[in-house]
Amino acid sequence: QVQLVESGGGLVQTGGSLRLSCAASGTISSINVMAWYRQAPGKQREWVATVTSGGTTNYANSVKGRFTISRDNAKNTVYLQTNSLKPEDTAVYHCNAVVTPPWGNSRSYWGQGTQVTDSS
Image (cartoon, rainbow, N blue to C red; front, side):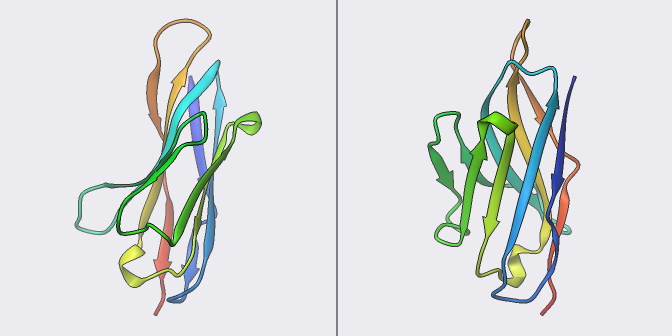
């Protein structure tokens, strides 16, 4: 089994910054793609950013230039640096990881989420 635990969310004023973290633990041989998604109240979950095991990144247009995704493969951890936050960034942020176990097939896992709220 694999667990993903997010941290770093909180209350921030418009224009502020937060650094989100998501650590994966459990039976892991390798982690392929790691990503962040978010879900605002009353809306569907939307993709925010992705980073591959090789470090290639992609971003949703709504966060490009403001958010930076990165990962530490040795720690099985993915980060999301959020800058210049806007009210529309308020959401629960979830991380996702495609994990390959020592045996068997790769599988996608989700974390429980961390709340980011623009307080303005």
